[in-house]
Image (cartoon, rainbow, N blue to C red; front, side, top):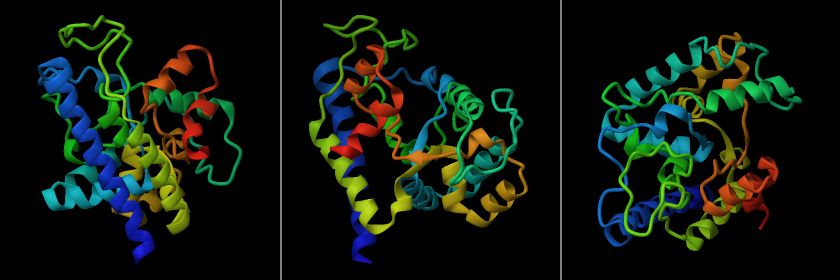
Length: 253
């Protein structure tokens, strides 16, 4: 009981850390909101990933808010939808070599619209959103020029204010170690809709996956993909380093 509780406590500490960093960013650096209300532009080109433990945490939060049932329906609809980005149905790849064409489909899906973005351009799971979403614009800057937020003093379109959170990086490494000691599967990551449905209704997820009703690219996972949560990762990718090396480095330190 104690061993499995520790990762959840660490994850909640990380959540609070990101929320505190976002508040500092707005109050001390930007002197205003970090996002334009009802914008949603970043969510139109990104389906985020989350770890198993994040999905378990999200299910708990959404249950408390009375929104779990509708959230699971959104997840299932996304998984069953025949996306043009992911035409291949090869079954689950657990323990199997993932072909390059599946990786390509997975990458294309990651740049599509998030299914949790509502018609009025708000996040349906905002209180339970992945850590990668909490990090975006806070510990890793938007540098593609898609953010319409007015520039604050000292910013340019390609150089936005962020918060340097070394303590959160340390906590993220601690989370990985705590999960490995408690339940190694908790650091497996995948697209948020797949992870939430699996955590919230695993029998249903298994039935859909086993009957090959879900595109393979939607249900492949990895080991603690941090989804570019830190600015140094983005900088190194821009410099041409391998994505696999950059996103996996935190767990090795």
